[in-house]
Amino acid sequence: MKLENSFEVPASPEAAWELLLDVPRILPCMPGAELTEVVDDSHWKAKINVKLGPISMTFATDVERTEVDEAARRAVLAARGRELRGRGQARATVVSSLAATNGGTKVDIVTDLTLSGPAAQYGRGIVADVSSQLVGRFADCLRAQLDSEPERAEAAVAQAAEPVSGLRLGLAAVGRSISRFFRRLLRR
Image (cartoon, rainbow, N blue to C red):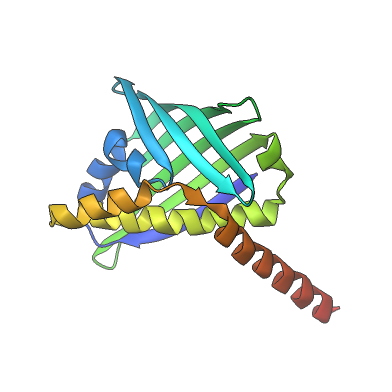
C-alpha cells in the first residue's frame, strides 16, 4: 500500500536536509523505534515496537539508504523488518523530499508499505490513518530536533521512544473509517 504524508518544519531546507541525512539522529523520532546498530554510513539496524489493540509486535529492522539526490533534496530509505516471534514481516520504501516554503521547509514522505502476518489483517484505511498520526508525532520530534534548545530535542526523542499504542490510534482510525462510510452512503 502507498501512504503519502506531508508536514512543515520551521527550518531552512539546508538545515532540514542535514537532519534528514542523519539517520541515527532521526530514527529515534519514529514512535517505538530504537537504533540498535550503525553498520556503516548507509546501513543501520533498529528495533520497532508496535501495539495494535491486543497485538504487540517487535520488528528487527534493517534500514538502508538507497538513494540521495542532493540537488533535488530527495532521499530514499529501504527498510525490511521481521517480527521477532515469527508473526510476520514488513517492507517499506520511504521517499522523502524537501522544498522551501513560507520561511520553512515542507517535507513530503511517500511510503510504499507491504505487511504480512497479523498486521496485514488490518484494513488499508486503518493502517493509513494510524500512519498519518505516527507521521504527525515524527514531525513534532523533527521540529524539536531542529530547535536550538537541546533539552526540547531530548524530551521529544524520549517521548517518541515510547512504544506505539495502536489501540487509541486504531479506535480513532476506525471512527474515521465509519465516518467515511456514512458520508459515502449519504452521497448515494
